[in-house]
Amino acid sequence: MTTRKDVAKLAGVSVATVSHVLSKKKYVSPELVEKVENVIRELNYQPNIIARSLSTKKTHHVGIIVNNIANTYYSEIALGMSKVASDHGYTVSIYFVGDDPQKYATSAIQRQLDGLFIATNGEFFTTEQMKKMLSANMVFVNSVMPGVGSTVSFDYGNGVEKMMNHLVELNHQRIGFLCGIPKSTPNFLRYKSFIRLLQKHQLPVLEECIIESEAPYRTDQNDGYIAMKKLLKTNSRITAVFCLNDPMALGAMKAIREEGLRIPQDISVVGCDDQFFASCIEPALTTLSVPKEEMGRQAMIQLLKQMDTGEKDDIILGVDFIVRDSTGPAPN
View: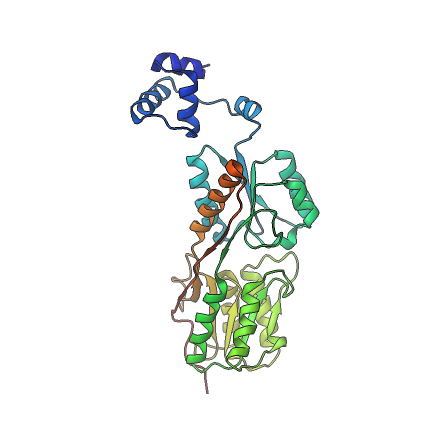
C-alpha cells in the first residue's frame, strides 16, 4: 500500500509538506502543491482516514439532521454543505429524524462526529440530548440553544412582510396559515411574523384558521392536504392561505381543487422556500424564495470556524418574494 512517505520520496519533499498539501492547513507554494498532487495521482495514493483520525483526534466527519429526507429543501442545503466539506477533506452524513429522536441522538454520539448541523426544528431533541451529541461544534437553523453553537437562519420576517403586503394590495382580508409545526415552537419566526403583520394591517387573527399538523411533523404534501381539508371545514370564508413550505402548498392546492374551488380565483395560495417544482406546477406557485444551498455552505463554514478557533457566529440570510400565478385579487 502506498504511504505518505512514498509520496514525499518521489516528489522530493518532506512528509510534512505532503501533509500540508493534503490538509490545506498551512501554506505551500503552488509549485510544490502541483508537484505533490502529480505524484499522488501517479501513485494513486489514498490517505488512511482511520490512521489520521487516531493521530489528530478528529474523524473528519460531520452530520446534518433533517426531518424529511424526501424534501428537496434539505437536499439543496446538504449539497451546499458537502461542497465546502469536500474542499476541506470532510465527509457529510445525513441523519433522518424519524419517530425515535433518541435513536438518532445515540447514533450521532457513537459516530464521534466533529460537527453537526441541526437543519430542522430543534423540538425533535431535548436540550440534554443535544448536549450529549456534541459539547461544541454545532450549528442550528435558529437559536434554540443560545450559546451552545452558531446559527444560520433565513430572514423570514422580511419575507413574510413582503408576502402580506402583496396580499393586502390584492384586497385579501381573511387569510389562513398552514403552519405545519406547533405554534409554540421556539423562534417560529414565520408564525410570529404572520400574526404581527395581520395586526399591523388591522386584519382579523383567525385562530381556527391557523392549522397545526400532527407529530412527527413531516410538513410534506400529505400534511398540507390534510391541513387544508381541516381549514376548509371551518367555513371561515378565507380568500388566501399561507403555507409553511412549498410541499404543503402543493397538498393544499390539491385539497382546494377537490372542493371544486379555483386557484387563485377563489383562494390564493402562497408557499415558502421556492423549491424546484414551484415554477412548474399549474398554476405556478407564489412563494418566499430562500438561498438553500448557501445555508448549507454557511453552516459548514461555521462548523470549520468552531473547529479551528472556537468562534461562534449568527448568520442571517436574505429572503426574496416571488409572485407567480397562484395569487390574485380577492373574490368579492
